[in-house]
Amino acid sequence: MPDYDDQIQQIEKEMSTMQYNKRTQHHYGLLRAKIAKLKEAQVKRSSGGKKGEGYSVKKSGDATVIIIGFPSSGKSTLLNSLTGSKSAVGAYAFTTLTVIPGLLVYKHAKIQILDVPGIVHGAASGRGRGKEVLAVMRNADLCIILLEVHHPEHLPVLQKEIYEADLRLDQKPPDVKIAKKSRGGISMASTVPLTKAEPETFKGIMKEFRIFNADVVIRDDITVDQFIDCIEGNKKYLPCIIVLNKMDTVSERELQELRRKTGAGLCISAQEKINIGQLKDAIYDKLNFISVYCKEARKKADMDVPMIMLRGSTVQSMCEKLHREFTAKFKYARVWGASAKFPGQKHHLPHVLADGDIVELHIK
Image (cartoon, rainbow, N blue to C red):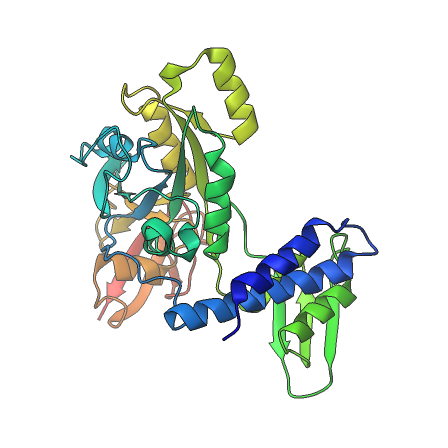
């Protein structure tokens, strides 16, 4: 039975001694593709092709936010400060052994917050319930990485484990279309200059994945790793806020330096409830919510209590959220607002709604 870890380590060792430049770019791309294939085979052998079963967490509310951090970084305390939940809190590692949900109600939005066991080195390969925690992340709408101010070195470890679990933080899926065909080789076109890798490198990577016939259109200037992500097609793209906790235990000067090093969006003290209001604002803004108002036929719209949706939501999304039978019984919708060309325009399920829209649903 092949030892995938040894093979991966050998390739990574070769890459660590390689100078990345135009001359070595092609070889580097092929090595990255080999690592991706080995990891894929490793997952299939060890877990039947699954990244981890995950905890049983029923989604509720308008969005789900997961708090990720090392053990004892203050996740449970933060959950309590945000939601008033009674998550177990202790000044020792692994206080949280299951997923603890709480509900933050803010600006009419109901936001589910999940406190999960701490992430440690090797989480993506299963250490310390890591696979289960990272699997829960795939169902979240936003990730908060919580760092203790005294351990900024935890950030790259967390980022690596999250990356290894096929999660991409604060990235958009690259605009790449790969259409496989039965013959004709690989044809590649790009609508932007490719400065991070040559087309021949991308072709070599595809052959490493045993794709020999395909039409490829690239509309973003992408890296080798991003192209591999597109081939594999199993990545979850998730917005993220990096938060420094226990800000009250260091000086202002140290705090600013830590913020610069980590790229943290916010500094808080979960224990002392410092800047918790600012974090609530950041969560709301990062989730990219829109407010949609419901209207009954021949009645005024209810403008007091909006329906909270994620940006990009459609009329169908709205129907599904209101009642599970609405989609099947849907006739049409009338829409007033930015997404309509004129007031009361008739639309159907695929129509994308805009912030402030008023929607009148007509159901059979």
